[in-house]
Image 1 (cartoon, protein in one colour):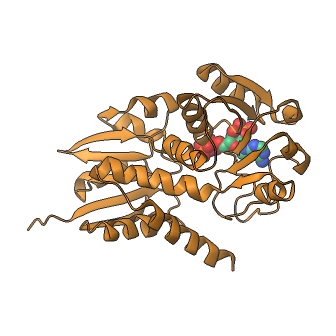
Image 2 (cartoon, rainbow, N blue to C red):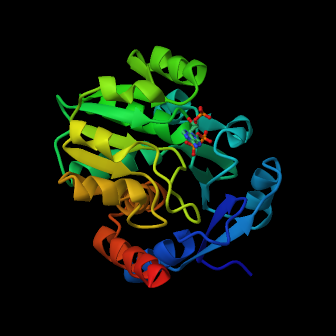
Length: 272
Ligand code: ATR
């Protein structure tokens, strides 16, 4: 017997540590939507569409390492996801799969809580999917991104594709800008003593954002706060990318503040 309950899932590998089930579960309950959201570990990307069909899944979040690989299994992909080259959101309607990217919206909305993007210059550290989402989002909002990466070839490629400047990481001292955004995994749990740039470099920027949310306050953000810079943790981006997924899946406005509260509470518990 079929009921009206809707089914959502997170696909990735690993997924056990993810806060998405907690966050989306809290949001659906508050919205009084009869829905389940669970994390499913997937080793092979091609099993994702099969599982969505089998479990009659209405919407899915896609995480590492499948954000790019999933694209060939989708019926349609949004313009922004195609440009970024990564899909983190799938909507299944009448058996057809549509791919979207809400990471760029997440970064834009998180930044917008602190500053106006338009007319500002951003140093984006990294050249992977998160960096591409940041670069796309900043350009979309009228800001100027500068790509900074350890490997020149990869950084230059991203800069060329999006028509922006590139600097190798070891030349970061040559850049001045309004905001520095880290999209590399440097400083992520358990390597909490690491930072992608030396504390001295942070004097060049007024704002410093990390896309890492575990720990909530990375070494980079600690150094930035100590240098008197304004800091933005990755938690805001995480919450906003999830909130945008709910808008896409339901057409309704999600309880973003509640989502932020449950995520921050859990992350604070973990650092206690
Ligand atoms: P994602 O898709 O999540 O953004 P990714 O594609 O693995 O992740 O990209 C990670 C980025 O972090 C890469 O640009 C990588 O730099 P390289 O292109 O030189 O590999 C960067 N990165 C990872 N570890 C790093 C480190 N220890 N120092 C500096 N940059 C690092």
